[in-house]
Image (cartoon, rainbow, N blue to C red; front, side, top):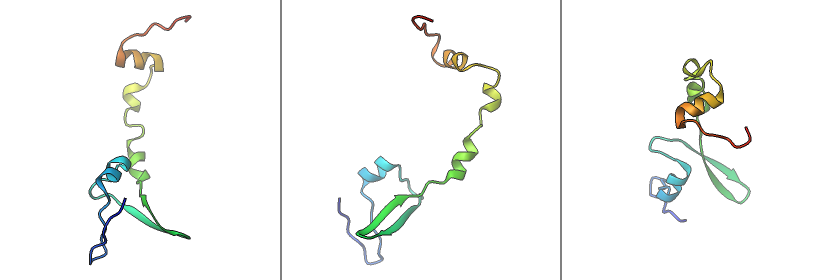
Length: 81
Protein backbone atom coordinates (compact mmCIF):
# COMPACT_ATOMS: atom_id res chain seq x y z
CA UNK A 1 0.00 0.00 0.00
CA UNK A 2 1.19 3.48 -0.76
CA UNK A 3 0.66 6.76 1.08
CA UNK A 4 1.65 10.31 0.25
CA UNK A 5 3.90 12.32 2.58
CA UNK A 6 2.54 15.81 3.36
CA UNK A 7 4.64 18.99 3.45
CA UNK A 8 4.79 18.54 7.25
CA UNK A 9 6.21 15.02 6.86
CA UNK A 10 2.96 13.34 7.89
CA UNK A 11 1.73 10.06 6.45
CA UNK A 12 -1.77 8.57 6.76
CA UNK A 13 -1.75 4.88 7.65
CA UNK A 14 -4.30 3.18 5.37
CA UNK A 15 -7.55 2.30 7.18
CA UNK A 16 -7.28 -1.40 6.33
CA UNK A 17 -3.92 -1.57 8.13
CA UNK A 18 -5.12 0.53 11.10
CA UNK A 19 -8.07 -1.84 11.50
CA UNK A 20 -5.97 -4.99 11.06
CA UNK A 21 -3.35 -3.95 13.62
CA UNK A 22 -5.64 -2.09 16.04
CA UNK A 23 -3.99 1.29 15.61
CA UNK A 24 -6.46 3.71 17.17
CA UNK A 25 -6.55 7.52 17.24
CA UNK A 26 -4.09 8.70 19.87
CA UNK A 27 -2.13 5.45 19.62
CA UNK A 28 1.63 5.42 19.25
CA UNK A 29 3.76 3.93 16.49
CA UNK A 30 7.52 3.57 16.28
CA UNK A 31 9.66 4.10 13.17
CA UNK A 32 12.56 1.68 13.01
CA UNK A 33 15.42 2.16 10.54
CA UNK A 34 16.41 -1.09 8.82
CA UNK A 35 19.10 -1.89 6.26
CA UNK A 36 16.55 -1.73 3.44
CA UNK A 37 14.22 1.05 4.59
CA UNK A 38 11.90 2.02 7.43
CA UNK A 39 9.64 -0.24 9.46
CA UNK A 40 6.58 1.04 11.31
CA UNK A 41 5.60 -0.80 14.48
CA UNK A 42 2.64 -0.30 16.80
CA UNK A 43 3.77 0.51 20.33
CA UNK A 44 2.01 -1.66 22.91
CA UNK A 45 1.67 -0.23 26.41
CA UNK A 46 2.28 -3.27 28.63
CA UNK A 47 1.55 -1.25 31.80
CA UNK A 48 -2.05 -0.74 30.65
CA UNK A 49 -2.45 -4.49 30.14
CA UNK A 50 -0.87 -5.25 33.49
CA UNK A 51 -3.41 -3.00 35.20
CA UNK A 52 -6.22 -5.22 33.89
CA UNK A 53 -4.63 -8.52 34.94
CA UNK A 54 -6.17 -9.85 38.09
CA UNK A 55 -9.16 -7.51 38.07
CA UNK A 56 -11.55 -10.46 38.58
CA UNK A 57 -9.35 -12.35 41.02
CA UNK A 58 -11.75 -11.92 43.96
CA UNK A 59 -14.87 -12.67 41.91
CA UNK A 60 -13.41 -15.89 40.48
CA UNK A 61 -11.59 -17.22 43.54
CA UNK A 62 -12.70 -20.48 45.05
CA UNK A 63 -14.06 -22.09 41.89
CA UNK A 64 -12.66 -24.51 39.37
CA UNK A 65 -12.29 -23.65 35.70
CA UNK A 66 -15.09 -26.12 34.92
CA UNK A 67 -17.42 -24.32 37.35
CA UNK A 68 -16.59 -20.92 35.82
CA UNK A 69 -17.20 -22.21 32.30
CA UNK A 70 -20.49 -23.82 33.31
CA UNK A 71 -21.54 -20.51 34.81
CA UNK A 72 -20.72 -18.71 31.56
CA UNK A 73 -22.17 -21.10 29.01
CA UNK A 74 -24.14 -23.65 30.99
CA UNK A 75 -23.10 -27.21 31.77
CA UNK A 76 -21.64 -29.30 28.96
CA UNK A 77 -21.57 -33.08 29.05
CA UNK A 78 -18.13 -34.36 28.04
CA UNK A 79 -18.19 -37.90 26.59
CA UNK A 80 -16.18 -40.44 28.59
CA UNK A 81 -15.95 -38.31 31.67
